[in-house]
Length: 41
Image 1 (cartoon, helix red, strand yellow):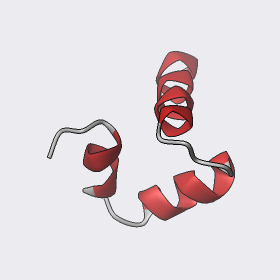
Image 2 (spheres, rainbow, N blue to C red):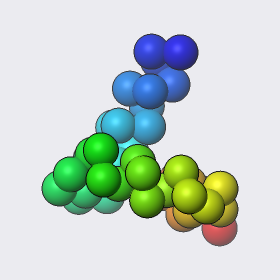
Image 3 (tube, rainbow, N blue to C red):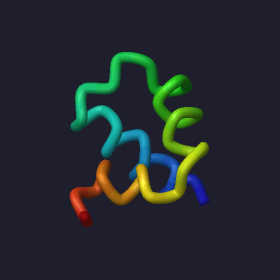
């Protein structure tokens, strides 16, 4: 679980997220947003 969380935090940092907590809350509201962070759409 820690590995997946670190992967997500690293991906958010690569997208220049200034506030990791705020970015994770924003992404968690819509499942398709996580796909854009990983450039899958």
